[in-house]
Image (cartoon, rainbow, N blue to C red):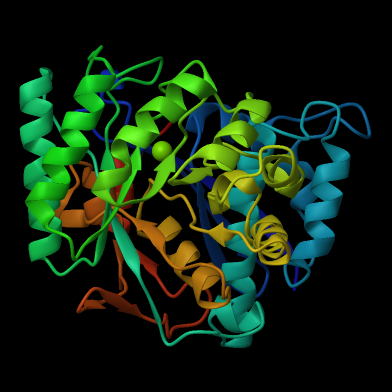
Length: 390
Ligand SMILES: [Mg+2]
């Protein structure tokens, strides 16, 4: 079998709002085609126009090539071989960043294609399931441009998630620092008050994560607030510090009463080695599209397993990425949860409509994916409707 061409679809919701800081508003979806008619689907979570150019652009240097020109004619059944070829052939402009994100979409599609060709779900190609079900945590992004409205929206979404059967949920308390949402600019007291309000709303029998989106400039300030959050039983705190402050992360991981999590932006397993060994993180959060696909994500799970850490994959896109996270989780013992945007509680039409045959949740658990490859089908009508044609 040979790869014949790759389609790149840049998708965009028509009501996007850059201040909302939600990357579920756009998408780069790739479809890899073969001479035997079998196709594979992948997506990645970065600026889709930039990632598309990483695929389409040509090159004139043997280590500065475009991804598409290296991909055509390759055997899709050998994803490791292809990953090495693309990584090596793009090193001058790649190694990290958008090129790796684009490679992640391609690699995801290759594993989907290979699973379809072999009639096997991806988790079986990764070694098989080490659990009977997958536990999603509901990622809850509130609306509201005042602190009061933001808090009310988040509390209501937390209550809704619990009522819908979720066993766990993550509160996006993103109101301070460079990644503050909805143009909010609040202080540490407000963070503590929101977490307290959410815990009181959901009760004690609900696992609660908190994402503060890189809000603190200094580890000691962060630690001071984390100690104030300890009474509210937070499972992990996500990205408390700038992602380049690995010494700060190490200090926090050593002193914090709450697990420290990060990794949503990291590319390649080498960046996760830094997070694990220099940053000393408790929870590694690879995004399968961004880290470089299944080929790299599996290496990150091994880094966590070898060090007694946890894997909780990041995913803020569509049913494609959620399916990818589910396969990785099924095959990874140290992965207790996957990030999951509940379609009913998410404002993004892409999240709600792009994919058919989604996993079914009963009593807060997802059954293992049964169909070959990723096990999902694109809603072609929605794909055409959201396609920018760019
Ligand atoms: Mg986050």
